[in-house]
Image 1 (cartoon, rainbow, N blue to C red):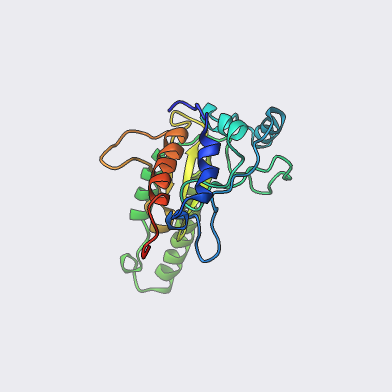
Image 2: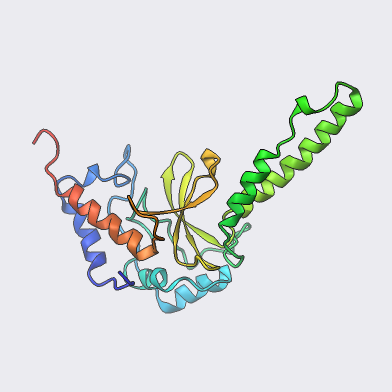
Length: 224
């Protein structure tokens, strides 16, 4: 898959009529979910406007998806986050123009291991004050490193329970998919298919989901 989206939008929308579509993860959850609905596609001018706001050019596969399939909606996890070309500039941009560097996870892991421990300090008031100052400095740096893990990446979808899927927009990993596992203190790790360590691109990620969704949605609902 290299970004040829011929027939993909039609395949996604057709799943709304499949007998078991609600069984597909993220399609219908307690009355919510993407429901196999896709937002309208964007024009070249609209994509250009979004890219200008973010200060980055989208990877070719994702850019063509926005132009040919839809600007969010049905997709992996609980669906793709929408892309609104008319949205105002966010107060806290995604950091898309900065370099995406998975090595930051290693740096963050090392910082976690260096967390100050009260037992390593003496019992005096001065030592207690020194511990509090050291811990406050460590905590500030921890917040900075944790935030920087997603620099240069775009949040694509919500996996639930504080986990997200990202796409790298800058750097050598540009166009590949990543797990935002900061909720489990695992940092940001590459997305991979089962029994594989190969990097996965946006188109591979999306079409793999669609193939699985078609298989699951076509099964007869339980009890019928």
